[in-house]
Length: 251
Length: 277
Image 1: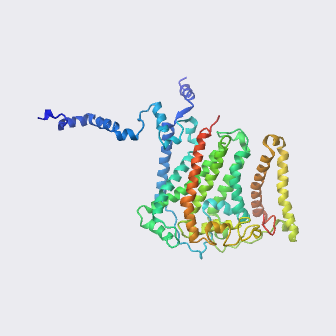
Image 2: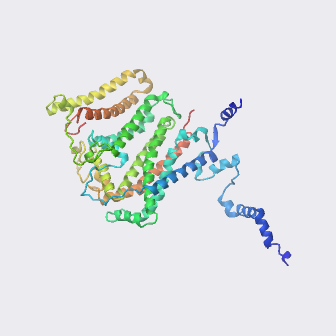
Image 3: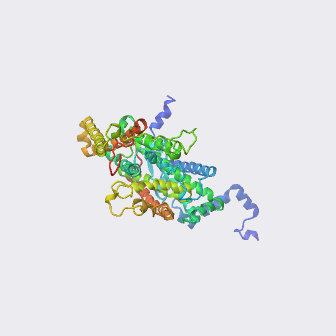
C-alpha cells in the first residue's frame, strides 16, 4: 500500500498547470543551457574564413552550404532543372500538403507508430535517408570532381573514373534518337500510370472516404520520391545515365 | 540636544538596526511603495494562484503563453524543446548580427577586409562572428528537429494544418537566411558555395538561360534570367554581395519575423500545444 500511494497521487494531479512557474522555469533553464552551449562552442571553435573571394580560382570540389548538399548530391543522378529547381519546390509544396493529404484522424498529438505506420515510414525515409544521409555523404565523402572518397582515402584531384554510363533506351538496344525518346517517354509515363493504377486498385475501398484528388496527388508525390531512389539505384548498380532523353530536358 | 532631533539616529542605533535587519526591511518598504516601483510593476511577487496568473497575463513578454497549460506539454520527451530553442537561436543571431553590422560593409572592396578587422581588431569581434555563425547553423538543425517532432506527434492534424504550412515557410526562410548570410564573409568558401547554389537557378524551366523550354521565352539570356535577378549579374560579384546583404539583414528577417508572429499566435488559437484529446 505504501508503494501505491505516490502513484495514486500522480494520477490525482490536475490536468492543467500554471505556466508560471512550471513552464517559464523550464524555458529559462533551456535558454540558459542553450546560451551557455553556444558561447562555449563559439569560444572553442572559430568560424572559417578562407582567402579572399576570387572568381578566377575555382576550388575543387566546390560545395554548396552543408544543408543543401543533399540536393547537390542528387545532381549526380538528375539534371539541374530537376535537382536544383523542381525537387526543392516539390519538397516544399509536398511538405505543405502533408496535413491535407494525410487525413488519418489517429495519432493527433501523441507519439504512435502503430496507428500511422505508412506516414511515419515515408517521412522518416525522406528526412533521414534522402535528406540527412545524403548531406552526410556530401559533406564527408564527396571529394574533387564530386567523386566518392572513403574517409581514409586521399582526395586525389586526378582520380580517373571511367564514364561507362549509358541511357536506358541504348541499354535496351534502341539506337535512333526518336525511337529512344519514345522509349524513354513510355518508360517514364508507364511508371507513373502503372504506379497510380496499382495504388488506386489496392486502395479502391478508400477512394470514397479519402477522395480521388487527394489520393491522386499523394501517389504522384510517392512515385516521384520512389522514382528518385530508383534512378539512384539504376545509376549505381546498372550504369544507367538517363531514362528519357528529349531535345528539351532529360530524366 | 540630540533628543530633540529624533530624525537623526545615533550610530549605535544604526548598527543595531543593521544587525537586526530592520534597516533593510525599511528600505525594502520604501522602495516597494515608491511611485517609481508601483508604476513599473503591476503586481507583487507572492506565490498565490492569482499572482501566478498575473505573472503571465500582465507581462507583455510572457503573455505569449497561456496562463495554464496541459501537464504533458512540460515534458521534454514530448516537445524536445526544439521550437523554443530555434526561436532563441534566432534572437541570438539578431543580437550578434546587429553588432556585426556595425563593422561590416557589403562592398566588394571592403567586405573581406572588414571581416579581417572584425576578427583581429574588434574587441570580441571573433566571438560575435562565431556566435552568429554557429547559432545560424544550429538553428537549421533545431528547426529540422522541431519539424520532425511535430510530424511524429501528428501535430499537423486538424485544427493545426495551417500552422504546419506556416512552419514549412519558416523552415524555408531559415535556410534562405543561412544561405544569404553564407556569402557575406566574401571569401572563397562563401563565393563558391553561393555560386554552386545559385547556378541552379539558371536551370529553372522557362526562366533560366539553361533550363528546359527557355528557347520559347523571349529575352532569356545569361545576363537576364532567374539567376541574374537573384545575384544582379551573370557571376557572383559585388552586386550579388549587396543583394544578399539586403535580403539577409532586412527582407528575410522581416518576413520570417512576421511569419513567426502568426506561427506563435496560431499555436494559441488552435488550442495550445497539441496533445492527446
